[in-house]
Amino acid sequence: MEQHVTIKGVKSGIVLKLDKDISFDELLPQIAEKFESAASFFGTSKIVLKIDGRDVSEEETEKILDSIKEKTKIRINAVITENKKLQDKLNEAVGKENEISDAEKDKKIDELTAENARLKEKIAGLTGVDGRYAEIHIGSLRSGMSYEAEQSLIILGDVKNGATVTAGGSIFVLGTLTGIAGAGVYGDKTAFVMALNMDPLQIRIADSLAISEDQDPVDFSKTGLTNSVRHVDNGPEVAEITDGHIILKPYDREFLENCAFLNDKN
Image (cartoon, rainbow, N blue to C red; front, side, top):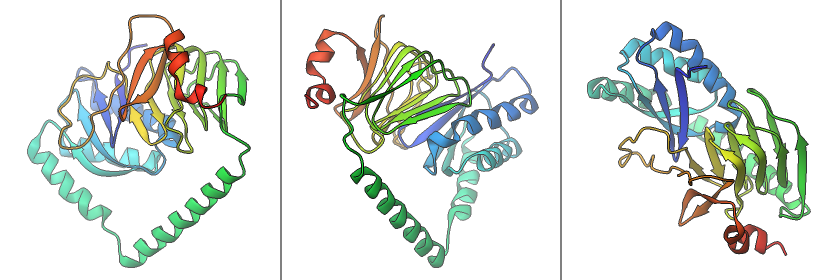
């Protein structure tokens, strides 16, 4: 089935690519469906939204923003569109909408402090997040499904577009990864994501976020939306953090011999 709407996560934001050849009324429910399926992965992030692929009017953009607000908890800090005047007008409105009172700020700080304390308590209770401990899930994960593991995770099947997997350690997909994968969710930057066939919507490792290279090149120099993953020629691939960026490498003997996550666990 042809994809008329795609969303790609990048560091600090999201690229929303829309088909220019069908009506906006046909696109809007697909936009809502895409963001709803990825809502748990994005969480409460503050992001920049880049609308790509077609010109959108002010009314259409407002409908897109309303749909994202309804289906997710993310906050749009800025909007990038083909129309510079519309972009400036939208960003002025977004800025006013995001303003909060001192009381609300204090409440948010208290909530974040409590959330951080709960996370620290959870991490302290773990017996170890390392390559020697892994959960195994048998079967493919379809769109709308999610699976979470406190340590490493082995999927004996596919992770399809619209599905989400997260793990405190590394993730091994013994099939095709076209959905969303998040490894090292408790902050382990040595964790990685491996798949026999790698074509993800997005990959997160610790606090780094990356997209597949099939996203059309866009100038994100002023927004920080720069990270991407690059495919190798063939065979199993692994995504890991190198020099602060998530990149793809062959999953081969050289990787296994030099992988910090695996070697540090022995």
